[in-house]
Image (tube, rainbow, N blue to C red; front, top):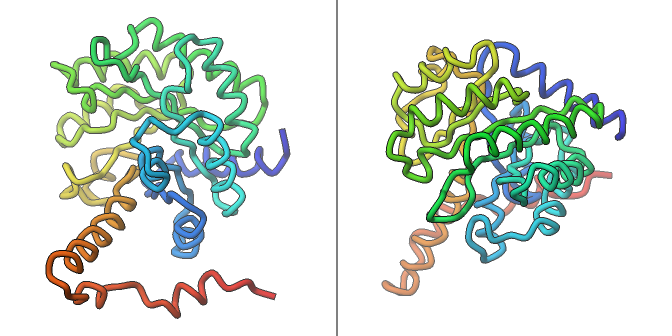
Length: 277
């Protein structure tokens, strides 16, 4: 693995050590460039945001297409990039390991592995299997000597587990012990539950997803709860889609173009993306 990747992974690891930072999620080269110019410290891909841009549902993008996308985002920025690598595109731990190896080759500074199966009858991998999958990812990263940050995700809230807090606490503790550097349970929004997760896995950092369901939580409030990393998932992509849908529907339904008045300035974007000599 290249020394630039080792350096950027070390930088990514360092910003998890104290304080709290926002990890926004671009879905293409243009949004990547803009978020870097705004001054964010690191970025993360969004599986859903990218899938929607390709006319596909979340999870329907094949592995190799996703790897090409991740590589494209990494090349577009000097910032550390965390890959939303879904469930590792495999069930068995050894296959997860092989796919993690491919993801590392894109130059990422971090990647996440979730425990969602995508199957209605058993939405989460059996706990021991889920732990072994984290173990496999950890061993692969260690063997690469890149220092890439591994995030272990419990999808209990997103799959509507009947007791999501209990499930998340039990699994995130096990993922931390299995070698996950950062722990993440997308969907948790109750401040008391967030505090319990933070306390359980401390001193390892916790990532919290802020999206439509818990947008009322501010950076300062999450920092006070002990959260180290905040991501928005597909939130920025959905914000862009929201503006597009409203403008397009207004044109079709009303025959007016009023909502185009809210557009980003063409000249500003053109200048942002202009090739510099």
